[in-house]
Amino acid sequence: MRCSQSLRNRVYFELMSHYGLKIRVVFAAILLSGFVSLQAFAVSVETLRVATWNTHDLFESTPNGVPDIADSVNFTPSSWRRWTEARYQSQITNLATVISVMKPDILFVQEVAGSNVLHHLTHVLRTLPEGAIDYPYIAHRKSPDRRGIDVALISRYPIKSYDLKIPVSGMRGALVVQIDVDETDVYGIVNHWKSWVGDEKSNVAIRMKEAQGVRKEALAILTEKPDATLFIAGDFNDNLDGDSLVKGLKAFPTRDAVSQVTDDTVFYNVLGELPKDKLGSYYYARRRVWNTFDAILVTQQMLLPIDSPGPAWRLPPSGKTTVETFRYPAMVGPDGRPMPSQRTRIGGTDEYVLGYSDHFPVYADFIRGNVVKK
Image (cartoon, rainbow, N blue to C red):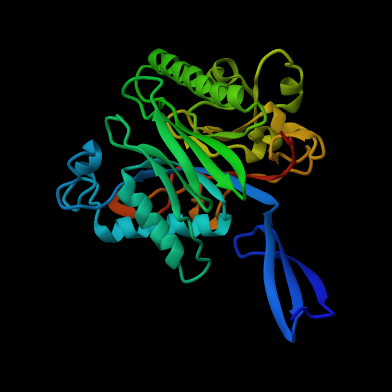
């Protein structure tokens, strides 16, 4: 029998989740035939935090190393590093603590030795006594890097696909990932380009080839989906005004430089939002200088005003952005540098520092845009 009178109420709640996201939850209360039915109509994510972090030699501790990870023999209890299980667990816990405070939705990761350490890291994140956070989705492919350190990505949102591209033979490659964020496609390219160790001229040439290879992958995505949300992030081992980024990838550190290019696809380095004294994420001890090796790049279209047609996610206008080189207080050493876990000599004595990483992480917040309907 159909009820002659019905009452329908919608209650809207604006709240912040413990992950730091603003979530709109819409409930419908329907009163029919003397009982109440409660139904969730929609969940809409309005802010997306993207971060990148070189976790610095994240190796397991095993008695004899891992057979398919070359440098793992140096991360055993009997090796010169004295890499014990307790020290490995300390590093994992320290990294997880920083991530739980930073609360990224998508984290680009570098220098992870295999998939096991990623599963360990996400397990610790889920079980932290305070600030537990779940990253149920992992993207990782074993690279041909001679040391066995790879790039990867962990996400709070489902990963639809991922593939490792190798622009330069023998290098760590670029991990191309597609993620479903609240029914919007988000693309990420995780990078860790050639370091400064070795011949400088050769290193510069390798980074330029890596930049050109990543640009090719990015343009392939944008050719198919011109309004794609695309993040290119990682440890580029080059400063924000370096040739590999500016000339190779065509990523610029100022909005003006990006806006002046109209006949080509260019990218914006969001670290350009920071003042100079906040830029440094890595201190290169050999040359005693701070570097901006860690960065997040976005497409030119992701700078469009939020109310104009374009990508699903945008960087807010200049002056309203949230971009940070995250200097978690406990990981900042006496000299201002990030403290890694390492064996070192202090006051003439061989000691072990239970630290974090030799890089500070970097993050940026993005907001929803007016998606083009097709």
